[in-house]
Amino acid sequence: MKQSVGQILKVSLVIILVLAAGFILLNPWTRNSDDSRHTLSFWSCSGQKEDVPFIVTAFNSAQDSIRVISNAIPWQEQEKKVLTAILSDNPPDAVSQFIPIVKWASRMALIPLDKFIERDHFDTTAIFPALWEEMRWQGHIFGIPVSSASYAFYYNKKLFRQAGLDPERPPKTWAEVIEYDKKLTRYDKAGNIIQMGFIPFYKSRLVASQNSPATAIIIAWEKGASFLSKDGKTVTLVNPALIEATQWILDFLKPYPIHKIEAFSAGFGYGDQQAFAAEKVAMMILPNIFPDYLRIHAPNVEYGIALTPTMPGCQMASSTGSWWIAIPRGSKNPEAAWDFIKFSASKKVQLDAYSVMDQNLFPANRLATADSIFLRDGKMQIFVTHLEHAQSPTIVPMAHDVFWREFYTAQEQIVFGNQSIEKALGTAQTIIQHELDKALTYDEYVRTKMNFFDK
Image: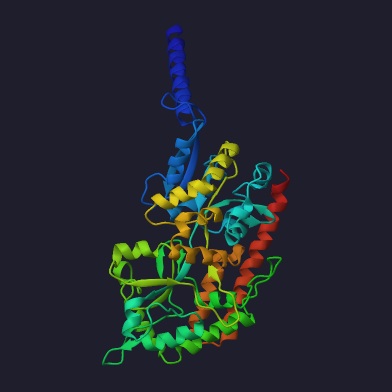
C-alpha cells in the first residue's frame, strides 16, 4: 500500500512539473532564456510577401523590453478566429485588419483607445481625416490607422496617341471622359467592341481589400452627397446627387448596347488580362499599388496618372480605407499593445515600411506623406491629394456588406434597363435600412446588457 501511495505521489509530481513547464512555455508574459523581454502576441493577415510584418521587425529592433510575436492568419478566417479567441478569453494582445472596425467594435470585441490617446497626447490630426473617422463608433476611437489605399485616374498614353488625343492631357471633367471615350472606343469588322475608353460600372479587383471605387458614388460625393444621416440611423441612398450621377452613367452608355459591353468585358481577368494592363480599357480609377502591378504583369504599358475628373463647379472626391491596429477585449497587456500601436503609426516607421514593402500600401500618417520621398515624386503627390479629399467606403458601417451588395444590385438593374433609377435605388435603400435597423436594435441591447463603456 505504501509503495502504491509513493508511486501515486511520484506520478502526481511529474504531472505538476509537466503542467508548470507547459504554462511557462505557453504563457505569453513569461521570460525565456533566449530573450529577456516579455512577449506580445500580434495577429495580422497573411498574404503579404514578408513572413513577419515590417512593423514587428522594426519594433523588436527598436527597444529591449517587449518582443512581438506575429501570427499571420488568412484574411478570410481572421475575423472568426479573433472573435473566437476573445470569447474563449485568450485573445491576441493586438490585431490588424482592414474590414470596417465598427463590425468589431459593435460586438464589444475591441477596447476603446480614448484614454491612451488623451494621456499620451497622440496627434490625431496626423492621420488623414477619412481614415480617422473610420475608427470612430459611439463617440469612441477603437483603432489606429497605419496604412491605407489611395486611388487616382490612370490613362494609357499609347492608346491616347492612336486616338489622336494629347497623351499629356488627360480628361479633367466627366464630360471630357465621355468625349475621350468616343475617340478611344474601337470595334472589329463584326461590330464587336474590342477597346473602350472607360467603363463606368466595371469593378477591377486587384487584391482582396481593394476594388475600383464606384464611379456613381465618386460623382455623388463630388456633388456633396451623404448616404447616411448625421445620427447614423437613416439611410439616404435616394438623393439628388446620386440620381444625377447615375443618370450620367446612363448618358455615357447611350451609344453602346449593354450586351456588347458585357461581351467585351467578359474576357477581363487577372494578371496581364486585367482590363487596363491588357490595354483594352484606356482610362480607369485604380489604387496606388497599381504601378507595381503593371511592373509585374504588363511592364510595357505606357501610362499616366492624373487627378480624378470632376463635375463642373465641384471639388474632387476619392475613396480610401484603413488597415488598422487595435487591442482586443481581454488583451493581457493593453499598455504594451498601445506602445506597439503608437510605434506602428509613427511617421518614421510608416516611411520605412513604405520604402521596403514591394506592394506599397499608402501611409495613414499625413506627416509621412509630407516627406521628401513623396514630395519629389509628382505621381505620389497625386495620391496624397486624393487622400486629402477622400471619403470612407464604409458608408453605412453597421450594414456595410449589405449596402454595397444592394448598391451594385440596383446599379445593375438600372444599367440593364430593368428598373428606373428612383425605383432601383429606393428598393436598395429599403433593404439597407431594414438591415441597419436590426443592427442598431441588437447593438443597443448588447451595450445595455454589458454596460461596456462604463467599465
